[in-house]
Amino acid sequence: MAGQNCLVTNDWICGEYLRSRSQELTDATVQHIWITAVSVAIGVAVAFPLALLARRGRHFAGPVLGLTTVLYTVPSLAMFSLLLPLFGLSAALVVTGLVLYSLTILVRNILAGLQAVPQEAKEAARGMGYGPVRLLWEVELPLAMPALMAGIRIATVSTIALTTVGSIVGRGGLGNLIEDALPSFFKAQVLAASVLCVLLAVVADLLLLGVQRLLTPWTRIPAARDADAVGAPVPAKAV
Image (cartoon, rainbow, N blue to C red; front, top):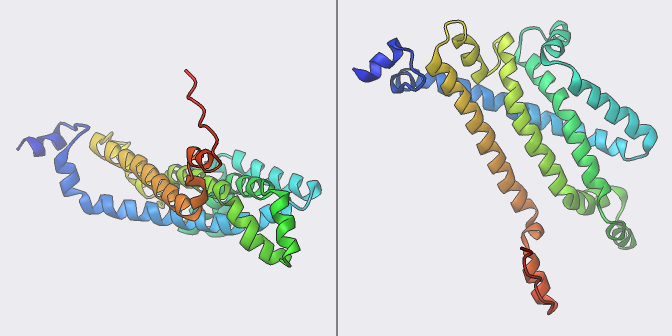
């Protein structure tokens, strides 16, 4: 009886709401994950060639970085309004907007990772007969992976938050529930959808961090082990 009363009294924490609306919450969460995953995947696919173009020189880097930065400064409502004539009220409208927002983060991180590859490593690979394509995929990209994955993690968390804005066209995942609950100030629905957004961001970041650690095993080698290997003393921690 107490659980049912929490809906009547409009409590923030209401177990009855979670039980009675579990399918609605699940559907909204699945849509949120789908929009985020597609947006980030397309963003990476677009950002990678742009980063390769930007590293060719300042005359390419300036326009590429400038354009992606300008896109990021456009307010979300204005961005969706500009894209509306092209895509209509569809999921493609939201995904395209999220892809454009992710480019400034992804392009800069991919470019920074590629530029940080030691020149000695590239020269050694060329000396072994590596061509430009093989050099990129087998030497530069693996060494740039930490920066690339850091960009993907930031872009993913940012996209999870921005996806809620898609509720203005009914494609906002958990944002739809928040928008629907605001007119009547349905506290349990607002809190549940908001908490799920936060949990999605945390879980996505942890999963991507795990992927990053799997792809870059050399970054997990403790500094102390390196020092022991050459017989050097490990410095004491400063107080």
